Length: 167
Image (cartoon, rainbow, N blue to C red; front, side, top):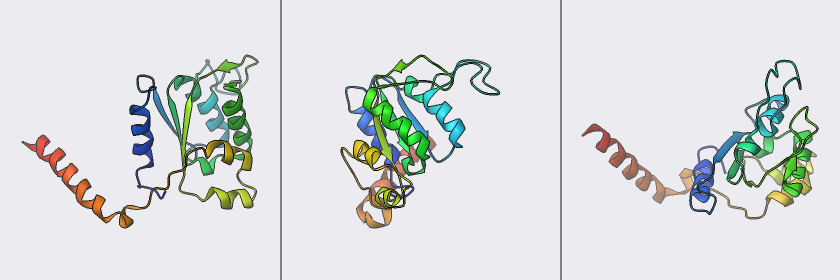
């Protein structure tokens, strides 16, 4: 779905209504960080793995253990990280950057994107095997301009919310 359609909210509601609700819900925007930093954010790193790595750092996969990791803008994930993501999804374990010790995780992964992943596959910019591994349940969220009834519901929600604050 397009930006602003509520992908984040849907992912959060799926998490809250699941058996994983008491565990963390972690969100990562794959398009907001440069590839080197994104790898460290997702998988963590050990002290000395690269310049500036002054301490061990847990990655988002570790932080979301037993919970849900929402990878938004998955279509912006660089190819080399797509391989590592596919491995984590298959094996449920990974190596933090600079480490020789595997970390095991139990994480539900939900992804979202505004990009057409099938077009990216044809262009060689997104791995087909990763696409099929992620595409277990697909939900298209149409933009708000196509959901006329939702405008009234949203207006009522925010009116009630702000009215309660301003009382």
